Image 1 (cartoon, rainbow, N blue to C red):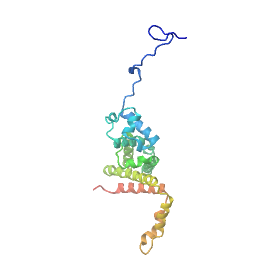
Image 2 (cartoon, rainbow, N blue to C red):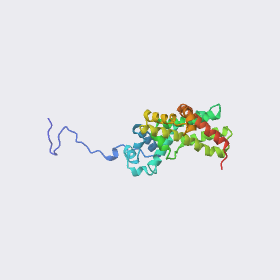
Image 3 (spheres, helix red, strand yellow):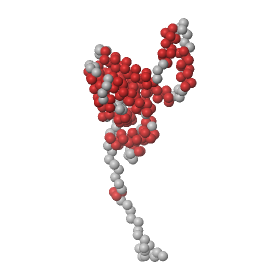
Image 4 (cartoon, rainbow, N blue to C red):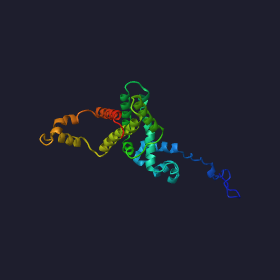
Length: 238
């Protein structure tokens, strides 16, 4: 049985001592790399739409104003996330062997697959400028392959932009279509419109309707890239 002493404390009970705030673990210092890494983890968990400065600040236990020291705005943040995700692009063909055109196509198909795997990134890639070493490595690798093929440097410089635009647009178009709910029924309507085109009004379309609809997505994408590569080789800059 406890006894209260003259100072009003219970004998046998150790008084609770206040804990100084200084004794609490300090929050990790903010860094650009840490902010981007957290943004990538948030995107994987909740989607790119949830990666905002306010949401990221909450995740990092800080205020949004602190983040603006490192990242200009949400658009720049999304560009940084895109740049980080480009680490998933397979650049082994750059150092590989075989036809240089086939190796460019392999890199571009890998790039497009990365965007297909992250739909929000595909749409963001249309409106942002990627940054970071992974993006620079991608561009450098494509330039290296074009140089290996003897493509003039000035054409290669413009050509890389065109090739990446093609992959980005392909992925963004598909993921946007998927998000809109454009399913088999809408495709069936589109196919029927081509096949039922009146030869008298649309003779060329009617003659080529099956060709217009032929080929797998992978085959058409590969052909798309090869057409661009051939054009980059042969077309002088103005």
